[in-house]
Structure formats: structure tokens, C-alpha cells
Length: 410
Image (cartoon, rainbow, N blue to C red; front, top):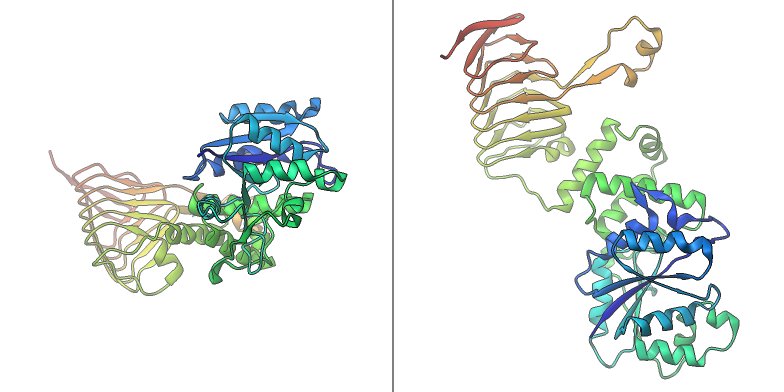
């Protein structure tokens, strides 16, 4: 049995011309969709079915670039195009995909195909109530069902579409897959029809990629869509894609998508969202009064004492076997003290981000302050109340304000 996904794609959309070729999160929208479908476990082939018009040479080129087949047929006779493509690629089961839906969910594709394993069914669709968000689902049918529909259809309106004739055919046994209760959100629409749709869904997808990578789930689509319904947050994403609150949400999403739980010995209570974003290793203890913000990576067997401030918005890495004493402050951003009035007024533009790196086996004494951009080498010791403004070599002991070399291991 050969399962073939056929993507209905053309560049001649009247409402949004060439939308399938537009840049969408670093790829063409069609290319993004193809890569999503490649995550399916049930698909044997992916075919892009486009028209014979010269303007759709670019559609064929995208298919070639993404190592999938293409098929060309009539622009108006979509049903005939599908049937001919299915015959050409010897499909047993055809999964119908619209190129307007770049956020197609590969798990739903697999669920639809699995349902067709039951030979008492000819046609399976997710477009029923309660349904998934509009644009993540699909339909599938046997090739025999498709060919029968193509033979029956004579009216132009039936040739322009694929499934309506199947639904009217008494010989076609259709099954609708309802969404689970937590995924039944037909009010969420993620299909691209207009310029406004494109901008909204590209923004949603960008945030999904920041949080989950390419293998994002329907649950994540729903969570991000709900978050973007907050106009205040949506404006932040649109204007400042590196805004602290946006990055925090994306990282929290990543933790959820990977089902990451805190290891035994990690104690994180206050500032729940930020605390849950910290990636910490085995046997690491973090007191409840610790402030955590941004992108923080903590190794194994690390002790982070009470009232510590860890600023990771410029990227903070703490190695294995470190002791971070009470009251320590580690920063990854500084304020530009330029006299320029514009910088003083615009808080965001006056911040400079620099990654800070703490090596393995480092001891930071109580109330030490580590400035942004500093690297502290393995085995170094920083004295209590020290202000570290420059890099510290491995094995060195630094004390003072500003901290200076007191002793270095030979």
C-alpha cells in the first residue's frame, strides 16, 4: 500500500497572489509545508500538484528543491489533476493537502491514514465538529474512491474541488475524525487566504519555532494562538521579536513541548514562569528566592544559594560542580551610558547584551557581582563582595572591587 500526500498548489491566487512562494519563517510557505509533511510516519510520497501555466514553474522548482515530486495538470479541473497525479504515482491512499495550510499537523495526517486501514471506510476527514483548529487537519481517501468521483463529476463546480462529489456519492463511506476535547478549537483559523492571514500566521509560526522547533504540536498552536489574541502581547511580538517577555514565553513553550521536568534536587518556587525556563542538570539545587530570567543553562551538581540574581537575557552558562553563594548577582546585559538623549529615552535601545560564562568547579563568594560578558575559567575562586569586570583565568583567585588576581594555580 502506497500512501501519497498530494499538495494542491498554484501561484495564481486572486486574493493573495504567489502566497505559496512567499518567504515564510525562512523558507517559502510551500517549502515549509513540505518539511512539515516529511515528519509524518505514514506518508510514502509527497507530490506537489500544480498547473500547466508558466507562472507555476516556480512551484515545481520549490518541489524540486525540497526533494519531492511534482505533477502538472489543468488549473480549473482540480479533481482531474488529483486523479491523474494519484494514478501517475500509483497511490493506494491519497491524502489531500492544501498549500494554504503551512501548519498542517503530521500527527493528524497519520491519524487520518490510520483510520483508512479499516477497509469499511473509503474517505476520512477531520472537517467535522468538534474539529481541530482550521488549517491543521486534512482528508484522505482511497484511489478507487478518487477515480470514481472523477468519473462521476461533470459540473464545473464539482471539477473545481475534490471532495464534494464524494460526500454526495452514496457508495462512498465517509468517517469524520473528531478532535479530542483539548484540541477542539474550530474558532482558531490558521489557513492563509489574505495578506492579514499571512502576517498573523507567519508571526504565530515564528513564535512556535522559537519555542518548539519544527516539530510543534497542535497543543502548541492553540497555546500560541491564544497568547497572540492578547493585543498587547501580539504588539510586542510584532515590534520586538527579542523582547524579554516574548522570549520567556517561547522558552516556556519549549519546556512544555519537550515534557522537560526539573531534576531531583532542583528547588524552584518563586517567579514560576522564569524558573521553569532554567535548564539545570542532575543534583542541582536552586533556592526558592533565586531570580531567574532569560536563557540560563546550569550544569550538574550546582548549588545556587538564596537571593541569587541570575540574568540570562544575553545568555548565561554555569558549568558543573559550581557553588553560587547567597546574594551573588550575575548579569548578561548592561545599559549604554551614551549621552545621546534618544538612547536615554528609549530603554530598549539602550541595553547591550553579552553572554556570560561560568566554568566548571567555580566558587562565587557571597554577594559577588559578575558583570555582563565575563568568562570565569574552571576552578576559579571569586571572593565575597567582589566586583568582577573582566575575564578570570582557570584556577585563579580574584578578590576586591574591582576584583584583581590574588593567586593563580601554577
